[in-house]
Length: 246
Length: 122
Image (tube, rainbow over all chains, first blue to last red; front, top):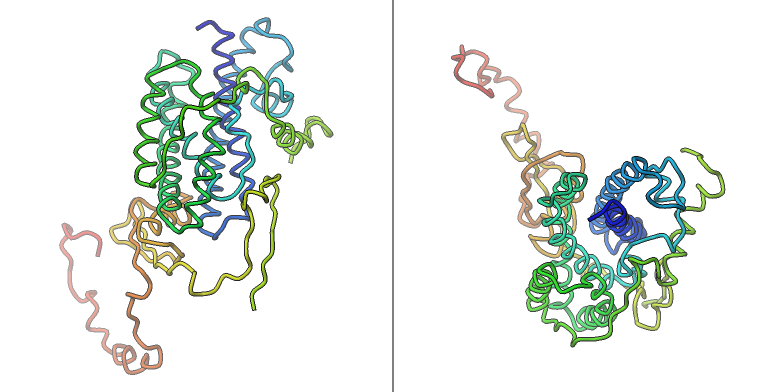
């Protein structure tokens, strides 16, 4: 992997964490019960923490070799990467930017995505890339809990009332087409992920959908219309009052 | 009488048709999750101490909720959860008869004995 690829990978990891973290944070104050409001806000904070670490690693990389890519505010910082890029420059997977929808869509999205992160971070923590080893190792503990928490909800909703089952099945239909983008090449990662999803779906009484057309484009900057709204809210202050602090 | 309202939050764009994000205002006490008492043991602590209570659908969720609500600032390394209905309490009205008689019996305190150095945590 050359430096540009490494930089893009770091951005993908950071953007994924930032955007899904922002989505989770939208529940703050709106959770179905106080305890779950705090739970999902904690998860949001975990994600923002991961995003910071990956952005810092990405900033270090590009500052060492500013010629590598053009179009970035230099010297790059975690803040400039998060707040001063436009949506076409974001490298997150589409599944992270979709609206929260109801509690079923919210928890299923976290489950599908954090299960992917779990196996990915497990690989990254032992990979040769020193810049991500330590971050992945620390993040893995957080993600392990996210998987457990969200899988519990998928099972509860699937194996719950008629209404909860209807909602979680709708969530599966809605989100499944966004999971293909996580595995653009056939890989061991995909097999591990599929096994985990299969296991939880079985317990929840859910069925993995037939092979279907999959959305993609996030990692090359072609996003859904939803990302722009997130960035507008997230970046407004820094764009309107550059460098302001609070 | 129950009112049915549709409530939308930021992030719910266009989900209404899918039946999402509609939160009915009926919610009765019957549908509420049971209450649990939470006990946490801190890293240095030897015993679990009562820290508060929370709602959860079952024991597993109570422990997860306790982790999220009561250990965010590194308060503990172990959690106990007990459904509140299983806690039996003494009657505050009987406090006089139950506790006051101990007031004048200082000789019950272990301060009258010399403790060997090997005995810790007294």
